[in-house]
Length: 419
Image (cartoon, rainbow, N blue to C red; front, side):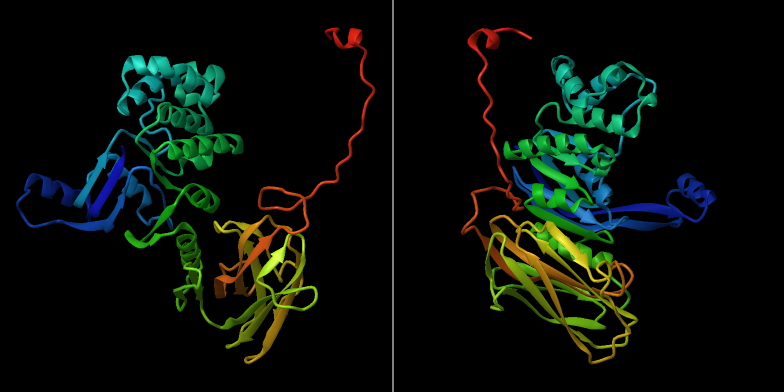
């Protein structure tokens, strides 16, 4: 079975002031050092047991792709060690290993051998590769005429034609169309359920939250956070909006979850409460019940605008619905220091049964990327129960109106006729 152990791994590349410095060091290797080391990864350590599903996230340049190359064996660590057991299938850079002048079928044989398959195995699996890729006659055309999406279809089909012990997927899947992305993630989920160890890099929050049971955040080449996917994704979102004087803190909650609070502090949320239509505070609500969310905000420093955003997230951290007062036309211009505002937001609890949370954001316009006064995840947690609605599944309550019309039955003679 597949396991991965990364212990104190680091990767550095040599940088030279000029090509002549590189040449001089090559000709006289024992003379003075003529290069500087550019560290892409430093002191990265973690372990994946068989069947683990882990997502790697981080800003561009954080070292995610380099880490996957170390694990897949396409490059060696400068420091530390990386050990992997089991058969590994890696989908890294798009079209990596494909020869542009060979056909897709020929490349399938070459790529299949690179992941440890015998020629007879590839021949036996070729019909499945062809069916899953769905590129038709292009399979027997040169890869240089393929679009990026077609290359990704073929590469993924080859890498997953036989269930690997370890599956490594970089962001190449992001170039595919929606249909193939759904198809690919269904196969990934199936492999994970069957015991494949999964390591995936993606900026798709929904994909990380739905597939992975753990997430690792890389920041400037180091492990910034390793833990439960929702907490790591919340911290990652805080880093995206990080400004010069921003603070990011994480606090344990009463239900053993981790709350992330970030921002520059010009305004803050003082209270978040949920009320029913009678004005009672509630923590447990009925499906479809009319609710009022009240958010109390205090202004600490002069700001040009005050905008409140909120979102409702399910237990996995996926946003069910979100908006802000910029979009609704209720932004507050030039609030004074010391002003306190109570925002009241009324909406029906059209959610499925389960646990949900409220996230809040205090910003200056339609996004938190310009000014993030405060971002607060898990600001309020509540439960939705089904008391008086028809039984249903899913995260959305969208009860239909059902009508049935009985048609006159066809005579036996007519029903036996073929069209």
